[in-house]
Amino acid sequence: MAYKTLVAASSKPLILSLLSHGKSYGYQIIKNVESLSQGELTWTDAMLYPVLHRMESDGLIQSEWVILDNGRKRKYYTITAKGKEEREVVRAQWQNVNSALNVLWGNNPTLELG
Image 1 (cartoon, rainbow, N blue to C red):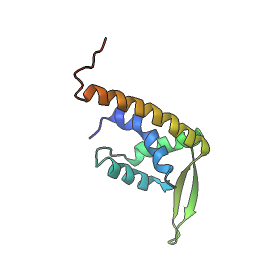
Image 2 (cartoon, rainbow, N blue to C red; image 1 turned 30 degrees about the vertical axis):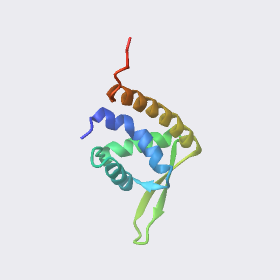
Image 3 (cartoon, one colour; image 1 turned 135 degrees about the horizontal axis):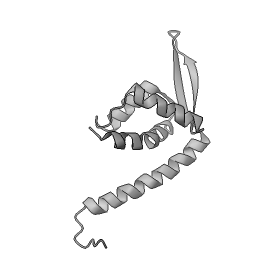
């Protein structure tokens, strides 16, 4: 199970990346993250929905209510143009962190830190 701080830090890039593949609703986002992380990242409604609301307020995503065939309503989220731009920014940041960790954790006998 991942540390809470890692879960919190990864929520925005994960949500933006998931939504770049198509619209989704809260429970589906939770299940997709759990599946993609092989159970390491477990999100709850109480964690996800405040993040979704904040991202919507920031203009990164938008939502719409859809009435299902059974008459129930479900809120779907989609990424906005601003969200796509932000996804590219956070992708570059995470790739830089990942690259640094790969160097540090790899078998690199010539690595010298000053």
